[in-house]
Amino acid sequence: MIVPLLLVAVMAGASLQAATGFGFGLLAAPVLFAVIEPQPAIGLLAVLGPEINLLTLLTEGRRPAPLLREVAVVVGFAGPGALLGVAVLRSLDAVALQIMVSVGVIVTLVIRHALTTEGSARVAPADGPRPRPAWSAPLAGFLAGALSTSTSTPGPPLLLHLLGRGARPWVVRDTLTTCFLALGLVTPLALLATRTTEAIPDLALTLTLIPAAVVGHLLGRRVFARLARGHHYELVVTIVLLVSVGSGLVAVLT
Image (cartoon, rainbow, N blue to C red; front, side, top):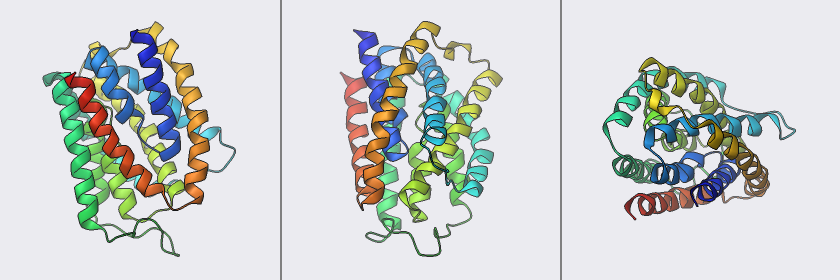
């Protein structure tokens, strides 16, 4: 029963990430934490995450449009955060880690609501994304690095930062994807540097789940094509964040 459950979780997470630009970890991590140990779960997510990001950037027949300066700042500050995240991973159990994820998501939504006016992120300014405070991208990068190695859910702080800039949906998605791809290198390096060998995932299980990520991506990118043409992207993202809080807590507390 465990393997089918993991297949569904990975497929659903990959589909969600392809549709919104984030969410693989938010959806798949709680299930993985519930059925296997947190450390190998992080290792498994560190393998599957880059696969999904490469599919987004390289297989959709278009030229990606990430905000490369944002990516550089985020990745630069993610390294120290990733080391902190390893310490958290080693010290907390699965329930505590999921509660931490849920609190982070709720805080993200509260700050998002407090700092933006109604509808401001739904339409980007004509001259491109709005500037943000100088501390916004570094803080988002540091928190994303810490969450990558502790819970494999770096999306919320990055999403908060990018939506605050008023970037269009495909720019948000491509920037998130590029950040996640880079963080996919930071995470294993941090685990290796701290000799967290327990995070090495089972090879057979990893090979079993890789095709599920491909199928999920193919399904999700069709959904994104519709979201990008409409004006519901941020609403869908908010719903996804709220649902992830509830499902994650249910997974670890039952």
